[in-house]
Length: 270
Length: 248
Image 1 (cartoon, helix red, strand yellow):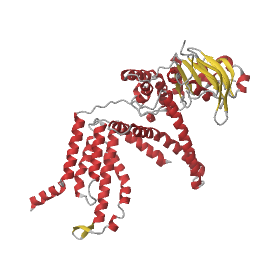
Image 2 (cartoon, chains in turn cyan, blue):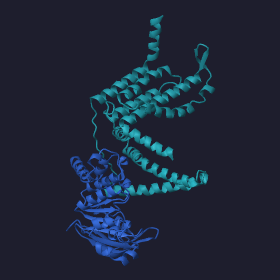
Image 3 (tube, helix red, strand yellow):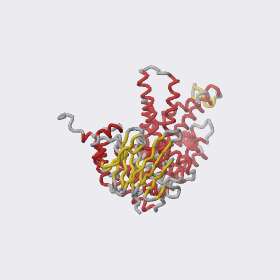
Image 4 (tube, one colour):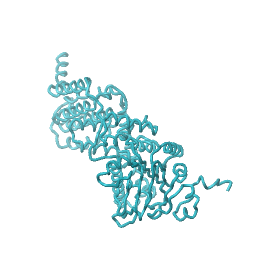
């Protein structure tokens, strides 16, 4: 199962990137989480034909990416991986929405095409910013940040456990499917009917493991309350980061900067 | 009264499905002793270990740790006293980073942060894993995981160390490293293992379990010299006592 193994390795790589050091890495996780969430809300809040207005929002991922020393091609590949889903979401827009919205010389562009491209642009922006957030902060710090921002501990602890055991469980699943494939000798084996017991076994093993983990926790005095360290401090840079970007987003959202710049340019040349 | 004494009296355990795992076990382990519990698969070793920290309750009989019986009131203190290291370190390392895992126990004991940090640091240094503190457990090798798992227990300052198959799945170097580490401990130590060569090196006393009963209890060397007993219990002499396969 190259795909499962590969997916796990990929997650690990994203996690390792978060151990890097840059001005963005050093910011408090809460600052990055709040700013990214605000960015996503702003990008999503546009009407469906918005396209030109969205372009200035590219600044946020581009600047954070540039400041964080992340491998750009890797991040772009991650973003490209979700674009097919975005295309699928807007696939029928050009068919149903044929009202002409713009004319470029001989080509007239319908609203459907504009909304399709807008969906793709928004997906790239939001997913890109989320990936950059994870790659500069790390999943664990994000969970702690969410917790300190008031998300109930029950949820963040669940997320942390999920993240810890996703590696163990996917490895277990990969081993089982590999064993099945090897004995299927390149054929389909018993087809779908063999997957039922396989998934059943995995579930039972997962259950047994959950019990052993619980035992390990109880033995070390766990009584239902998680005590975690609060290490990071919200500093001047963090305030600047949150307030600075929020102001930029609000200005971009309230004024159509692209149109103003466009008007200024055409005014200049006419 | 010493905290380091383990007394098992007429212990019997029957699982919910009717399987009789332990039949009438009795033994006492004294302060500072290093004892191996060996036996075939299904002899009841793991079931016995789970009684030592109160995870399983006896169907009949009694387990006393440091003179105290295992009851709801004594359970928290007994769980601190008996440090248990599981066979699969992945079950034991569940926190996001090694440090948080080692600090998990002391935090639950309600210790102040400064002391938690000191204990976690000392425990990690003791097993030679200080440099791994900030790593997530899934980035560690098998040997590293095992040593960190031991540190998670050491940070609670246990008096009795219980380990299930400590050398299982380790490469020769990591195994040697672990044996060296365990030799240095002065706790009361209880191991279960199929690694009988490790048993010779670490334990002066051995308890042989067979079908839920104590078949023999005595000095390790005596037990390993009793060929008939070993054969009856589906065991054999450790390789180091078998002589050279080439010269033989």
